[in-house]
Image 1 (tube, one colour):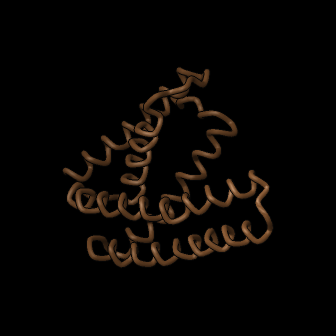
Image 2 (cartoon, one colour):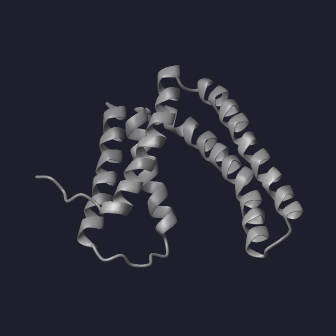
Length: 155
C-alpha cells in the first residue's frame, strides 16, 4: 500500500512538472532550475526503478554520493582541457590536460563498478539494473524535450 502511494505521488509530481512546462511554453531563466530538474529526476527514477519508500531512503544518499563523485572526477579535468584549448596552449600542454581528462573518464568506470556493489547491498539485482536503464531513459527524455519541447498532456 505504501509503495503504491509513493509511486503514485512520484508520478503525479512528474506529470505536474510536465504540465507546467506546457503552460509556460516560453523559456524563462529560472533561478531554481537545478532543484526542479533534480525533483523530476528523483520522481522519474523512483518510478522507473520501482523503489519502495524504505529502499528510497537508503538508495538516494548513495546515488547522490556516486553522482557527485562522477561529476567531480571529470568536471575539473574537462575545464582544464577546455581552458588550455581556448588559451591556445602548446600541444605539449594540451596533451598533459588531455591525458588527465582521459584518466578521469577511466575513473568513471571504476566509480560505476563500485556503485553497483553499493547498490547491491540495499537493492536486488533487477532494481540495480533498472537504475542504469532509467538514467538513460531520463537522459533521452530530456534531450527530446530540449529538441522538440514538452508533449502536450493527453486526455
